Length: 68
Image 1 (cartoon, helix red, strand yellow):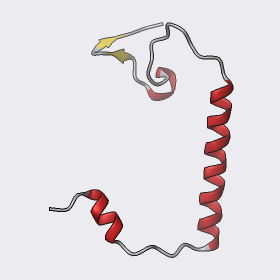
Image 2 (cartoon, rainbow, N blue to C red):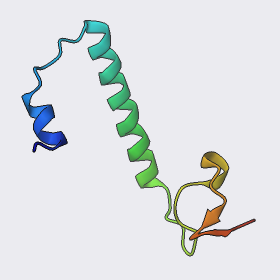
Image 3 (cartoon, rainbow, N blue to C red):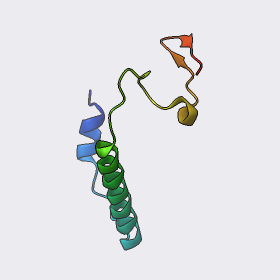
Image 4 (tube, rainbow, N blue to C red):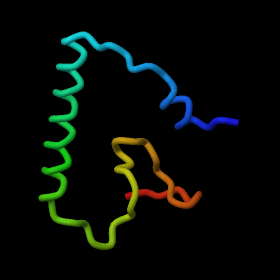
């Protein structure tokens, strides 16, 4: 039985158009810029942890609903 990584290795490489390669390069550059900016930000001490609930709509921690 093969797992997901074996299937990806066996698949032939897809040919991407120049526009698709450019879009992937731009996305990677934005991702690196975001990560560099996040690394410069001060770390939160004693926060709730996890993703921002206002952005992700997750208003519970370990099954307990939280509020501000």
